Length: 148
Image (tube, rainbow, N blue to C red; front, side):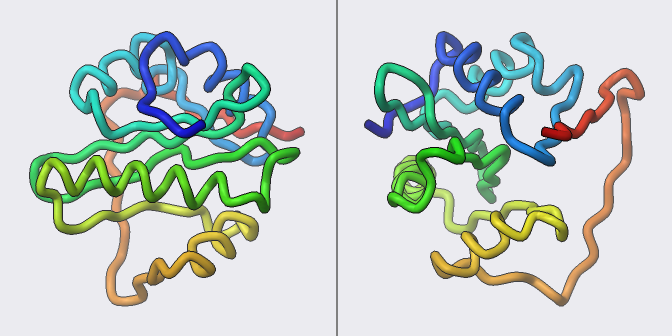
């Protein structure tokens, strides 16, 4: 079942994130408080996949009124290649469309072969005409990558 994510899903989603090799978790943004803040700002666009009584996939999805963005797209390794990821993307895009958002972007680490193959397979276009820049405002927001 694919449905809208709520803060009550946090423990299940966070547990899933911790299982995925190479997944980067930020100490502030990905805390319960950080996700609650994100979901309050974007109450209808993030989704989870639930099966066998537990969260097996999730997407944080939000927008700024102009462009949507997908974050932390993941499916439990034991549930992959069954259309769950694509179904979640469709649900998130439908929610963005309801909010009149016309364009959606995402970032995939270059070393994320599984993720990059997924995005290419479902028709997303890799941009080669731009550079991506970051500036850290909160030095306490440390990213740790899962090594599993």
